Amino acid sequence: MEAAQKDRVAAMLAEVQVAILVTQGDQWPTATMQAFAETPEFDLLFIMNDTTEKFQNLLKHPHVTVFLDAREKGKVETFEISRLLIQGVAIEVERESAEWDAMKAVFLKKSPFEAPFFKFPTLRMMRVRPKRLSYAGADRVAFKVEF
Image (cartoon, rainbow, N blue to C red):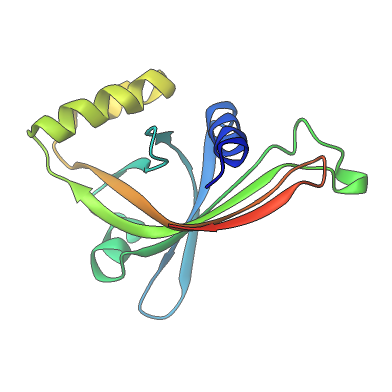
């Protein structure tokens, strides 16, 4: 990924608070709007209850699609909207581990309003490692990257 592309992706991830997480169920895909956080490597972090459909889907089918957009800043009528599609593989972050503590801090820095959920023992954190992404800017700059 070129430096300018990396800067665009990083800026978009930093400005957007929620993403659409698409998981594959046994029969149907499931799409949910989720708060998220990102690492400098563009791994995406999501939290969820262990009984949710999306979590159960991720355990069975870890390949996911994540969609983000900045429609509130764009012009919908001319489709001048920055958007980012990331496809990757989700892995669970083990609770009570050094990784959990580090990723919890990253997550809560971006989404402090999610802090109350961390008191529940059924909370799980999933880390999506990107395999490819597609970016389209409101300024018509577009690119695709494979990792």
